[in-house]
Picture: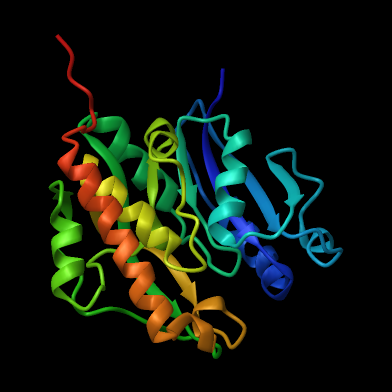
Length: 254
């Protein structure tokens, strides 16, 4: 029986035309024998603009729609159909370099004490060139709480990128999926995972993060100071509350 890695993508009309590039990057992935991927594309809304860009001739692709609630709500709704062991984030306008899924999978299959992985990111610019980040951490395990403390001490910037998350499905479900926020919902999940589980960072490039005028993080609303302050406050409060509850993964009984 095939085991599955679930790829979760939230999409809305402005980013739909990038789905073809995301799909081609998935088709380049090679997984170990007995494994395959299942791409869950969840539209944030019910327009007619997204469906034409979905590869309907591939049985590994599932497309659904729902009322608008933002990308966090769309991704969490997609979890209703996540029939695999692991969940991988892929934004509609981003791409996975070859080898990414296999590397992520190897980490979590090889060490039960690790609940999630992240990897290096290159910004993909409109002219096709790429730009890296010169302050990536060392590769290897990330101990519980390390991401939160770095994020808090560095103007709410994590040392690892939430758009590269690969995590155990049961752990994502236990944490309630993505936060119901207008933005930073993926940072909220990253910090929640960090609060309850060891993670891992891979220094090999695991994401091409597209920079383009229509991306949500480039809009003025994303940088509104009052809203950003509120988002950061609730993201931190949840992470600290989880840490103080002393529940952690893996659960040790007996």
